[in-house]
Length: 385
Image (cartoon, rainbow, N blue to C red):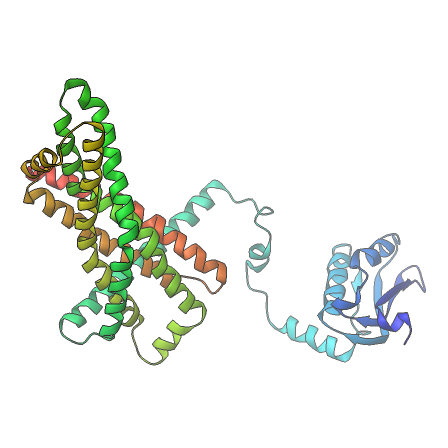
């Protein structure tokens, strides 16, 4: 077999000033290294009197969609100049495909959607309107998800929950015991930092003992819950989003719906229950580690005895501060678990979408935790606690 048969080739002839023939030979497949449509257009545009172009494909041995692409590009460019490109010389199969494509009308806006992002210039109002529509759709989807999760919880209370208790135990272990090492490290470091920053100022006034008050109240009332929430958002919330996102990519969630099983009850409910139950325990543990970190700094830098530091901490803390911190952690557990599951259920059908879902879950959870902290702090101030 010679080179012309192995590789697609093109030549242009002009029987008259008003007609031209494009002759194609060889294998017209993408893998064969084909000539571009621009080469043929360059020859044709040099003929100002040209009115009709035909194709001769008798020498083509094999072809694929690249032949149709070549023809359509030439026809589109020539139509702008008023030149007719005839498809009669194309193979029978290619002509049938062209007729089938022409039988389906083009969807309005399809060409605009196919343009690269940098080509189309949208107006400011168009961008604002599109953003508002996207936001309203996201809010509607989130509210629907929360409502479905609430219905799943009520079904659980009535003893009709569609999930396995073993799943809850597994998620409790993942969100509880396995999270203790990182909570220990972060809790102790945060308590040490609070003690160190307070010691710099309080030592000036000879009030080093009040470092225990600062660390104890800050950790137990807010910071223990906040730091635990941030850790669990990056650790467990992202894991929930990635797990459900992978199930979405593999169409496992669609399979559950096909079998009549609610994905929210079967997949979301065990995760929400596990993390909501474990967050208060992790918060108390983080409070203890933070106070321990403050004790280390107080004994090492301020020459305070462990007994006096512990006594001052006990005299400062009360159950009100503890309950406020536990309420923070309970709310954070709901936010983190629901956000992670929501982003996982919203995940697209590609591998990159799984990573995007995990990132979005962490960012959204932290934002809503900050908003919840501000709201709870304001309510506590109104109630005088």
